[in-house]
Image 1 (cartoon, rainbow, N blue to C red):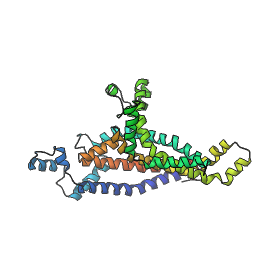
Image 2 (cartoon, rainbow, N blue to C red):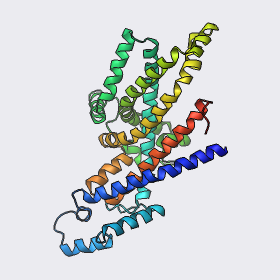
Image 3 (cartoon, helix red, strand yellow):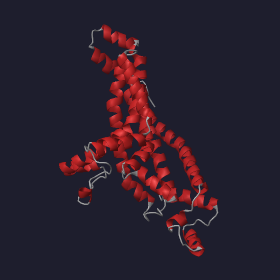
Image 4 (cartoon, rainbow, N blue to C red):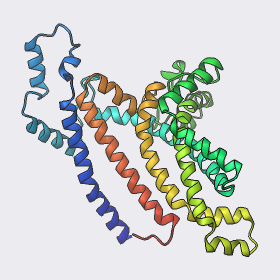
Length: 339
């Protein structure tokens, strides 16, 4: 345990410079991009110069850039991400309320990717250089070559507008929006806790299209990595030995080959999960999903600097945490790895 604790401490220390650089770049980029957050907040029309100057002074935007930067970092250390000029609420409060929606969408997107990507990758590896392998590889390449926003729009047109099977957008039907009582912020979990099966069914219907659109690209990438990793171990000596012992092929593949191929699969799975947080920006916009990604787009539109800075910091820390968790999972999959 001492070695593991020391490793986690070292990773956290190494993560701090990365987060610091990310925050610094975000701070400078927002102030260099065109647009005035105060003018956007005031409506952009018929605003006197005196009122604009007063608001800039109240928000501290008339201070030198280096003073604003120091105050910004000081607020981050205290856990203060600022206050959104668009909603008037603390940015931390906005992110906490919206993060469960994004995490729920990303998790089910990865579930979709894993359910279809790993089995098809295994089939392609076991049927290497055969027609099934070629067909699956074309499927994988096509899946991650398609833009997420285009896939989302096509899903809406086909399954929602034309066929009418699923809702077009949103996280919950309007008739349930005010009566539903949140417990954890994760709607599916809350519906299970409350044992409200009608609302649970409606939530699943709303989740299917955005999760499928988000997970489709990751399915192709995960499938190709699974195929490559499995091909690498299928001719290994321990797999040949397992077969010579008379073990069933299913046992050889699942217990011996696949387990030793899991390291690159877990790596890609964790990294792609972090990528899904970025892909959620497009998916949440297309499907009007009330998560962090949509909040980021709305903040960008209204030049809400504080919301943008806080969201970037929040997502950066989350991605660094996911990478750390993935590294720690290695030792559970491969006993040879120790920290």
